[in-house]
Length: 311
Image (cartoon, rainbow, N blue to C red; front, side):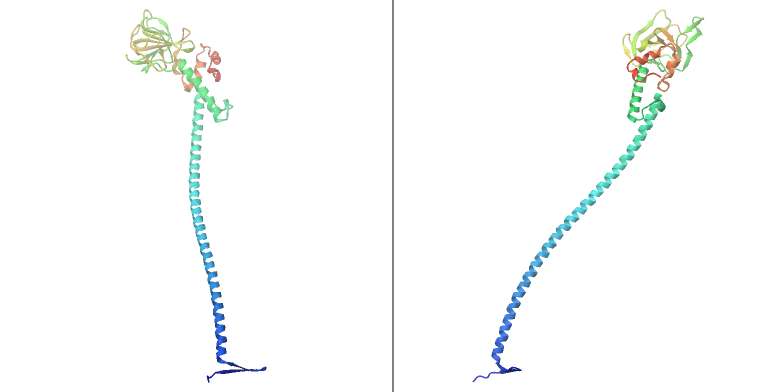
């Protein structure tokens, strides 16, 4: 007969007895149930945790990508800010340069207007472009006239021996009208045309006392005479320009020494060369008041002079 351990449980309802092997059976069953429940719960929790970890890893990767994108965007933003700063700096320098150039342009325009005699109170044009156009027209007029009408010295002379007017002729020994200006100069000194023109005569002029002579025809009826030359360097009928060398000074004809006899004539009428010799861009209006023998007012009707009238 096997021995059994009997457990007796007494309550208010009575007593009950349990054999040990049945208790162990219950305990085993409960253990198995708890173990199974624990296994499933653990698996569920493990799967849940794995899913959470996967989500966290995915979120972490997404955050890394966003961070890298933000970092790249920030670097791009910083680069763009740098470029913008450089552009602003360049624009500032260009603005300062333009301001300087505008100031220089304004100063140059003021100087040009002053040189041309265009005073601010005489001009109704406040706009720089209008002022410049008016100055351009005035300069064109003045340059046209300065190339057309004799002006400046015809030779680099030491001094003026005789001027225009009555004098005692050194050869004829009598008072006689001197129609030009005598510039003292060594033989062989270059002689220059004082305006654009055409050579009317070039050679030895017999019976005139001029010796070797060049006569140039210019615009508006003007002529210039270059006498007592040592050498003539142009031919009759050829065109010459202002400042062109046309001969060499000398002592030919009725002359007591090397010099250049220079005349300015208008329609065959001799004029005092002095106002023409002194005439230039800096005193442009002086000629029209000093030389009264020429009807200057009629030039206003001529192109291109009608765009900016003579003062």
